[in-house]
Length: 420
Ligand SMILES: Cc1cc2nc3c(=O)[nH]c(=O)nc-3n(C[C@H](O)[C@H](O)[C@H](O)COP(=O)(O)OP(=O)(O)OC[C@H]3O[C@@H](n4cnc5c(N)ncnc54)[C@H](O)[C@@H]3O)c2cc1C
Image 1 (tube, rainbow, N blue to C red):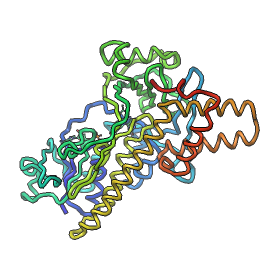
Image 2 (image 1 turned 90 degrees about the horizontal axis):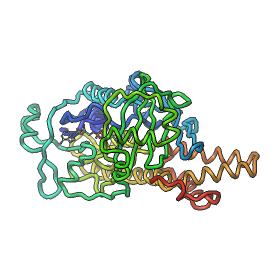
Image 3 (image 1 turned 45 degrees about the vertical axis):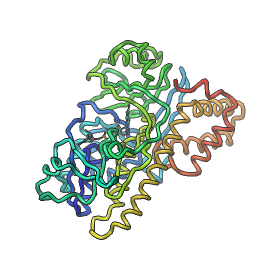
């Protein structure tokens, strides 16, 4: 079976590697347009088993930093510490932070080692009979080993460019945010505690991240409404530095920082495609949907969806009917999981999670004792489990969060903690 994968990011390279391992003839078409500094450095524990199945965990550990959890700050002294210890017995109790260039190169090497052929080109396509995707002749000509024969199946892994969706006029459900994200790597900044912990900070305008990287470096990023960003200056550098200096805790803890890289800028929004598979094609990773990065679901969804998609495509001829059924299941899973991540992130944006934390702290003060402690531990376990990817779509965890979000915010008003 001949398969063309378009886009050599983590989603494309992973699905290509897995399909090649299953025996397909796979060509990965990538335009080589990845910038030197790529956003998306903080990973979640659900990825670790994927690394193990690809046989690359040791390499990931070598290029990255072990991440024990995430701390979310939402006031001068208020914070929620999420530890991945909570998923003991379900998933590894850690994840990694990685410099993306090295990480993406590692996945590309994995695809090459699996027998994938990489074509450096911007893929061009045509639509036939309204719903079939074809490689344009000039792109097909880049694959001489197929001797002009068309691929049996095509996979769009072009990230937020969503090539197939745009060609086919497929609409998407969009979330409310329209932000700009600026980030850079810094040195001479203390790492947050415990070592490797990622910090997500609610700021006066928008939110920010601190991601420890080898070096030791610290990736500092801010995600802010485009109009608010202009308050801090006209350039990405002024806006990034201005937002950092505007936050007392961030300015204090990173006061001695020295910037090592240019400031990289990315758009931030939320998008889920209304259709992710077709008769001879499927989308994977960001090309299917993109959830806000506050809790770092991006690479997890990219690589887990790649595994799921590879599992849904039989590489033997004559299995088209079962492929169609499996692709529909894949599409359903993808949409459901993205929506679950989005719902979780919404609790942070609209302030409910912070109001719940305040209420919990207040209750523990008023009614100290075993029940309060057990309750606190149970909620934390579910929340950390969701942030790790393991429980994000688990009905019980979602029910718990919804119930607490409605009934357990009497000590504080969520609107006071909403992210602007
Ligand atoms: C502000 C921000 C912060 C983020 N932080 C995190 C984080 O901390 N953790 C995390 O897990 N995720 C994070 N993400 C999300 C993460 O970066 C993405 O989810 C991830 O990169 C998606 O991988 P992908 O392979 O689907 O797409 P991409 O990484 O975008 O790869 C797509 C590839 O396709 C290529 N391509 C496009 N069109 C063509 C064409 N016509 N022909 C050939 N090649 C083509 C592109 O050049 C690119 O190489 C963040 C995103 C943003 C915006």
